[in-house]
Length: 349
Image (cartoon, rainbow, N blue to C red; front, side, top):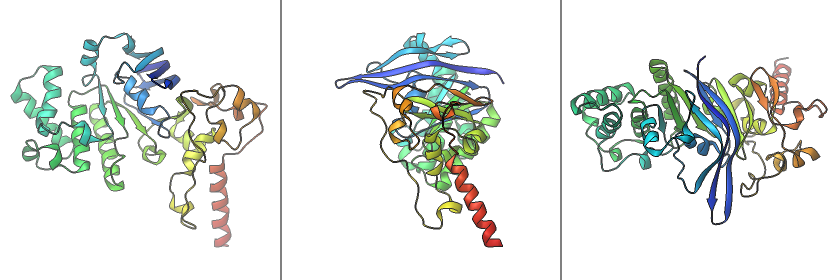
């Protein structure tokens, strides 16, 4: 596949009155044409800061890009001036934000907001922009688009507002679409509809998607590759199958165990959680950021940051447990599945 975006050793900090917040620390990844890449992790892990860095939406100051490169077709976005970035935002890289009610302009009709992006980047006439905007409303499956075109955001439901955000993000046919937790405020049924819609639109216009979420369950059927972030760093990366079935980092195991599942949780109704709190990014730990919450932590985990161990083809895990001299620890999510399978077999006998 053709590589369209490269992030190399990105470091982003925020300068505050209390000190420097090291939000993103040495993050590197690639994005390929037509794929969906998911970035997952808890709140505060650096997902959204990383995503906003791709189109320089973190306000500067307090944000400061300390190191690294963001290469779009070989050109470093961090070297661009604001006027150059305005040409990239919306036309080459679109973004769907977390809360559509605060992202949409309450004083403008939905149709005008879709037209605005098109007229700014493609310099088309109003009549042509209106036709395209109506077509986009149909494409995102908003019923009666001619009537809804002249309505305001408060007249739409949460799911419909999110569809409008998708229409605005895609109206200029961007090569990359960043979806920052697009289903967080929606119920489960609408979540599935929005994810299916994004997948169908991706197939139509061949755009690449970066999906930001804290929920691994959301990306199970949407992403081809997954990046797991914690404490501003990438702790594991690989294909969806590798992350779900062959994960090699205790933090990933914790995320997987916290996903509600009927086959595991129906007996006692209790959900698993990761004990403890994320690290203080004013003073990040010297070693692994997950060490204080990890039941498998060793002495070296607190003293030295683990490298990215290659645990399979294009599968990397930043955990000392993957070192050849480390004690062998089996993935607890796989143990739970084995025990459950054995229990079912015993009942059938």
